[in-house]
Length: 188
Image (cartoon, rainbow, N blue to C red):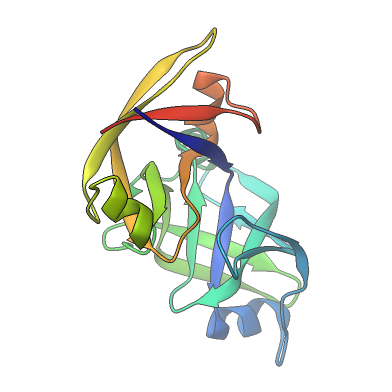
């Protein structure tokens, strides 16, 4: 079994250049709050309000850099609270996903097909994937030990220029009692 660090992916927003302008104004650039584990990715100081048919969530963090398409990544619990249909997808796969309203300091924007519950996934470098005999989009399982031990199946392998990390959403992480020092054991 291979060991890997677990990271919790809380609700967040990725904005396109065009949508950043609509929500924050012309020539606006995100301000970096802190770096994330994956190179060139960061949590911005900026946040937005997101709204569904039932409720709103405030101070939802924007992650940078900007993407080609705007997307909002939520937990199942977030979707239920907001009153939107939870659609399980890999990041970037927005076909058939839910609509959501984004509210920024300079405007509002309804995103069609932009809200997803991200599938649990393993980011892994090309070199390490080769060493561990893993292929892009392969499904694997991982266990987390402890008082709330659990096995997660259907983890999607994402091979690229990554630091190796297992990403779970807040619902999954809370179910397993994940903290910043949690290690998962990959069944490969």
